[in-house]
Image (cartoon, rainbow, N blue to C red; front, side, top):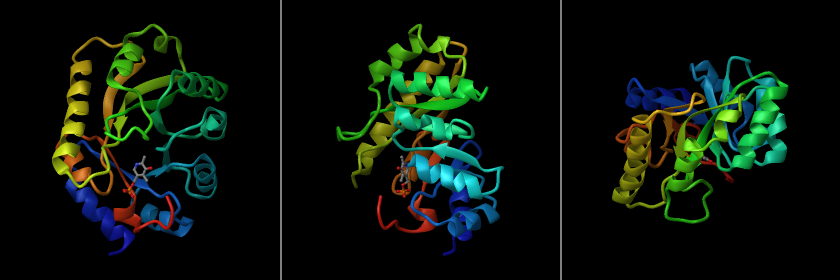
Amino acid sequence: MSIAENIASIKSELGEYCKLVAVSKTKPIKDLQEAYDAGQRIFGENKVQELAEKHEVLPKDIQWHMIGHLQRNKVKYIAPFVSLIHAVDSLRLIKEINKQAAKHDRVIDCLLQVHIAEEDTKFGFDYEEVQNLIFGDELSTFNNIRITGLMGMATNTSNEEQVHKEFATLSDFVEDLKSKSLPQNINLKELSIGMSGDYKIALQNNSTLVRIGSSIFGARNYQ
Ligand SMILES: *Cc1c(COP(=O)(O)O)cnc(C)c1O
């Protein structure tokens, strides 16, 4: 199937509340252009340099999402244009995003990455840290960032029940937070869960952003 057909097929499964982030990392510009021509406007990349280079040459109405681990010293390269940063995993990173966003007179939307997988190689806050951060004093002092939701990556396993449980726990956690009164720059409307292998399970657990790469563009040669 073509890139356009893959996008159409995935979009037909998403329902009203979930958006598709086309994860185009490692893929050539012509593949992204093909997705764009099929109507796709949200693209996700996991490397700052690649993201900046692709932004430079592709149409300006694309919303660029940074989905990978972000180093503080690289925030400045994407701050002028990035639309959403998915994997925010430390207060120091939040501070840097706020600082760089201020330089460009922008407010940058961010998702807090929650560590939900069994593997301890993956980045992210644990549940208690997210709670402390959200109800702590510090976040509300950052005028140039907005926390718009949470992001998680499930364990890389064929055990669907486990993946289901990890997504459901995260979804319940968000619902619980949303029922409380939150600081003004926090609005937890987005839940970024689901990749090619597990987005159907994510959709059953209130995903609002699925990050899909290989099911659109085909397998990657390297990560
Ligand atoms: C690569 C990547 C994806 C997409 O993975 P696929 O399995 O190709 O859909 C999603 N999220 C993150 C954070 C990624 O790095």
